[in-house]
Image (cartoon, rainbow, N blue to C red; front, side, top):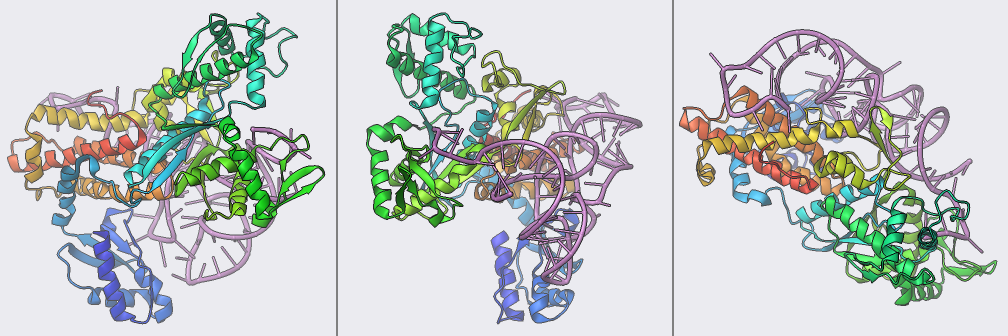
Length: 551
RNA sequence: GCCCCCGUAGCUCAGUGGAUAGAGCAUCCCCCUCCUAAGGGGAGGGUCACACGUUCGAUUCGUGUCGGGGGCACCA
């Protein structure tokens, strides 16, 4: 419909101003009295044509080819042209939705190309916390959104199983194996002090076997065997994270280990390739990358004087590997504290000069999450000792509410997670509000108890009251909402849309009855709410929130 | 000092180069003989942080100032 109108306007614009090249912008007006679509075309043309906008609008309308879909056009305000669709074309969306079912709103924009979404990527040093939860919710929704836009999506989790943090974990577990209390002075100064360290130590001493999604390790039980403690601790915590993620309904396709980049020689290869590129130099006994060649404000050390590499070198190797695996697009969903790596990784990839586009990969960085309960900030968790875990949240407020709240805000603004609100089983809570709309429809359809397939072929002409018109408009905006959310890499757009759709439905529900004697009107209304049910389901699915049949 | 994000109603947050800036909560009023009141309708509440600039038009774009948060190592 939108493309149809755009074409009509293009023809009209050409008639009036054959010389000019203009972008035609059609938008859905906020207020229903401004029609189904509106364009500012006349205002844009006003300057080059040196005419007043309303006069141009009049000419445009005169030059507009006739269309079966338009009921009327009008000029409003400074010179907007508002289009009002006839009711038949407004109602058509119901049939489109019922026909397409779960495919309604999906498109093929990605053309089946490979995209990787890397998210969570938490190092196995403790349970996932609420910040990881935000990354998990946003990352998984991004993956779902891209999939709905026709991309071939891989979900990837990258972690460091070797460096200093893991050494610290290992000696913390060792200390607990020896029965050293976390308060005791001989406990490692910067060691991990959460209760889970005890659990790992106990499991290690009893020679437990842990099976994580990507690894399996049996403990030796020997406290002199640091390698075994290390491997076991990593596997143990990876498994804990698997459980956290499972409770959050998230599944990864690929786990990548930083250590593998060294053992397979990819780090070495990358360093050599960078040296060959001519963008490196030696100074002060270190090897430097000239990231300033690619927009950084100063050059960065790659190889330290002690011979080891700085963290962004394996990062570049890792991203080279991603590129070589055929991902034309990569989206890294990370906490905002990773922001400083972006320039370096991109600079390194450019220096390699292997055809990687300039802005590759994409980054979606999320800001901090503050958890509130009873009007106060929550900082402590029994499980982890120092931060609120994802599992605590899921257990307290449920998976649906947690996912919704963490994905329903723009990633780049700080988020306050109000536990009391998320737990509230009332209209204060947007998750329940949306799910309730779906459940209400289910309930009506159940009481009707008819064959849903007949709804595909009913006469929709009775759908003419303002509530119905509003709902029809909202439903027809769903596909472009899905497209938009994917283009902006912004899952919260879907959350907002669903809230609006649920609101339209609730208003309608209160104003009119569906199961009425007038058979024609009844069937038309059932058709409409059935279509609404479908779109609520499709949208909730993008968020990974369940569409409940009953509440 | 430099870089990034944010600043919109009392609170939590949407939104947009255009038409009267929205939602929920909170406050006040109204609506179940009726498909789930976990709902609906209404009222009040705003200098869109501030200044300047670009524009026919700026809350939206640019620059600067102020405020909040985060990041700025041969840590990861």
